[in-house]
Each structure stands twice: as structure tokens, then as C-alpha cells.
Image 1 (tube, rainbow, N blue to C red):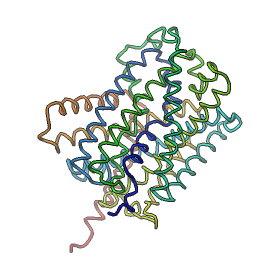
Image 2 (tube, helix red, strand yellow; image 1 turned 90 degrees about the vertical axis):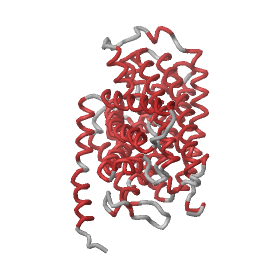
Image 3 (tube, rainbow, N blue to C red; image 1 turned 180 degrees about the vertical axis):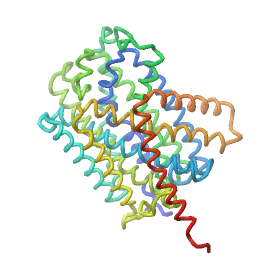
Image 4 (cartoon, rainbow, N blue to C red; image 1 turned 180 degrees about the horizontal axis):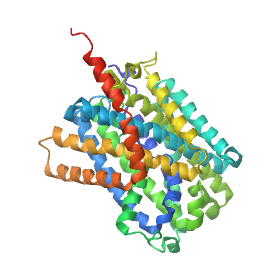
Length: 431
């Protein structure tokens, strides 16, 4: 494929990885972690380590299996069509539910700058829907345009985020971390629950492996973008979130829909709060842009292989899988509308747990696929893979019974489609 048909290079792909990881979580997640107090730091450390190990596994697989589709391609090669479909469907559920969460976080960030925009739950929902469909329009204009948008928005949020984290260290209060375990739950339970929440902030580590069909020199570019992007985004995210927890009282932190902006306002004045609110709004929009691009590419590979309906493989004149893009955005919109009566923090927490549960299954199967595909790997790589596998299982359990139930319902909803597709393929005449 020519360079014109492969518009994503190394820097654009790194920006896409960083942009998809640093999105809503870093700005809103501290509020969801408030009930756990300083004990949340244990979960943060586990999530960062687990995410880095997963990123390495994805990078190794990208060198071996250059197929379009990321985790789906790895699972299908290792275990066949059935498991491949399961991973593709589960990851697709993750992506469009993640877009709902990011759109909600965008509304919360916009509300910190322009309170009237989110004065009621209905207005909040309309703001979230507006952002979602603007990003959908950008992706419909082409992959290159979405990639350029990723570079711009990533630059506008990464630098201010690092500056905030470094400066904020000087205003962290030790009292904010007492009591250490504010929830009173066993530390094992706290660490597991926090790991499930904080993993949301690292979702996107696999971004570079999905659109390989439009990446230049994917076997070299994808692994490098995955590791570089994950490392930069992971460290910046953990630093900023920890600083916010140390700057705000627990009750204020728990109730705030934009805790980072609130911390900046209380510490450096209203102008700083507005500035962080603007950065958070740009960040959420940038992440939403990247994930919307990803949702179109997620369904393309299984559709080309006959595991998803053919409609998902339809491309417009710019090479965009328009049907998959629109179908995903419609489902994300439905999730936002059906839950708009919740508070922004409650809606955000529910949707990130749902999205995390849906993506942990592909993570887990990806690690297992690596074990089957790379049978002659070095010992240290096997140790990393064991850690990634253990982390995936542990975080999946930590999402909780309700989230696992909804995740299972959404995954099982794909079973009729798989059976229909298999029946359609079997009924085709030979030759």
C-alpha cells in the first residue's frame, strides 16, 4: 500500500497512543478514587506496572503479526475464528462504551469553564452528544485529518499536564493522605477495586496495534509507538492524579465533576482553574477524537474476514469504514441518553467500569495468544507475560459483580451475530 494510503507515521501514531490514554481519566478519575484515600496509590502502582507489561506484550505481537485489527488479529491467529470474534466483539463494546464515558467527561470539563452548559443533566447529555458527533464528523473526513487532530490536541494537553503535576507537588498536603485507607475495606479489596478504576486511565495502550492497515512500516512503527506512548502517558497521568488527591479535601474531591480544575482554582486562583478546565476540555475532546477513529477501524478487520456483517467493511471515498463508525457512535449515544439522569461522576464511574471490563477480556486473551504464537521467547519475556496475565485476571475481578454482569450481557449479545455470520458463510456455494 502506498504512503498516501498509509497516512499514519511514527509521530502521528505516538500522538494517537498518548492522546487516547490521556483523556478523561486524568481529569475526572481522582473524584472516583476519593473514597479510598491514600490507599489508592497501591492500585495506581499496580495498574501502571500491569499496563506497561501489557504494552510490551502488544509490542512483541505487533512485530510477529502485522495483521490489521490488533488483539482480534492475534486471537484469531492463535485460537481461530470463534475466539477471534469474541475478542473483536468485546473490544468493540469497550470502544463505543469508552466513547460514551469520554464524552461525559468532556461535558464535565466544559462545565467547569462554562457552568451553564451543564447546569442540568439534560444539558450535560446534550454537550456529551455534541462532542461525540463532532468527532464522528472529523473521522468521516478521513484518517489523515483525525491523525492531525490527534497531534494538535495531544500537544495542547500533555505539556500543561506535566507542568501542573510538577508544580502541584509543592502544594500537596500530607493530611490529605490520612487516614491511609479511608474506605475501611481490606487493602486487597481496595487495591483490586482501585486497579480496575485506574486501568481506565491507561486504556488505549493497544491503540497503535489496531489501525495497522493505515500505518507506514507497521512492524517497526507500531511497537515503538506503543511503548513510547504508554510510558510517557502513564507517568504523566499517575503524577497528575496523585497530586490532585493531595491538594483537595476528600469531601470536595468526591463531589467535584472536575477535580483537577478545582485544585488549580483553590491553589492558584480562578484563572488557573479556568485554564486547567480548558486543558481538560481539549484533552477529553482529543481522546474522543482518537477513540472515535479507533471504533471505525475496530470492526473493519473482522468484517473483512467474514466474522462481522459485511456492512462494517463498507468504505467511503476517503477509505473510512463509515458504517462501523456511525453504528458505534449511535450505540455510544444510546448509552449516554439512557443514563443521563445520573450525576456526571456516577455516570462516568459506571461507564468506565463497563468499558474496562469489556477490554480486559481482549487483554487477557492477547497475552494467552502471545504464549501460543511466540513459542521460543526469552525467559524475561515470559516473566513479563505472566505478570500481564495475572494483572488482567485480577483487574477483571476488581470491576465488581454488577459491571461483570453487564459486560457479560453485552458480550453474549454478539453470539447471535456470530452464529448468523457462520451460517451465512456455510450456505455460500463452493467455488
